[in-house]
Image (tube, rainbow, N blue to C red; front, side, top):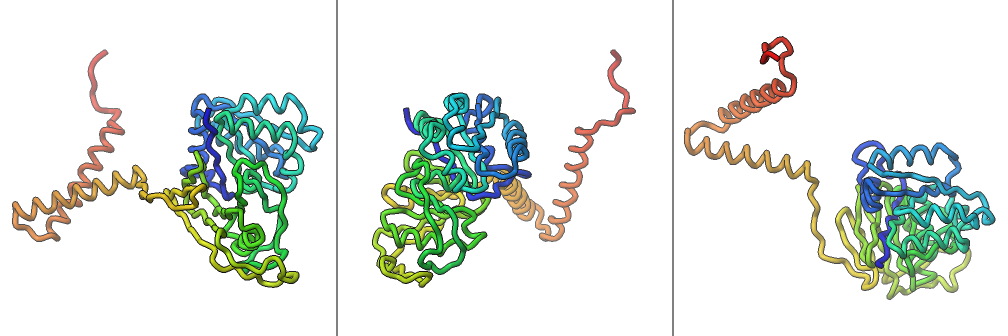
Length: 329
């Protein structure tokens, strides 16, 4: 059985309008057959965060939403919590304190159950802290800034769902280029991944696809030249030769070959319909000009009148006059 997809969300995903990322998660979990387990361990909001995601996932059509909450490593050995994850088709880890999340989950039966769910085909998603813990190496805490400096961040072990990678979230919004550069300068075998807010890196079969309104930034230090091994405390680091990839919506990236895949721009269906309608109007205007030898301004006025008439007819069909005589019963 192939591994399930990973959804690495940079935080602050849209919860009010299109909910594109959350909708894709529920769809990947099985849609109307989805059994979703929410893990709110990183959050300090208590039941509020669970109630929020419960409502969102059910609004997107999920059949079942359960909570898996552990407040200690001892509780992470609870077989009842593990059983929930064993039955889940989708696992969602909320934002919050990623060091709390990793210290309670990693290396316990609960953490093992998350890894096992991914390996049997369930979708595993996480936002903010829940994104960082999916990588093999996790940024625990640190300061922002564009310049990499010695000791500007600390590391911890993640779940290892995404091997040889380090993930940072809220990337562009909190200016975290420097700290991700510092990590890859110190560990050039790692691929650095920075995910913007309301953006997800969706990984399936070692191919990353970007979903959302921001970007995923990839730092490839394979051929880096650096002085990270002898730079003094807080000193700026030399980081030369790092390959930068900034990937917007729809971009695809091979994480094994570390190469951009052919990029196809996706068109929103609603936008495509509007473009088609505009094209139809232009073609009709061209035919009118050729047939009637009328000026474009006259034809534009005619087109506006036609649109108003069509709007009125549509409204009349949608809201018929209740006083109009109908057929007898």
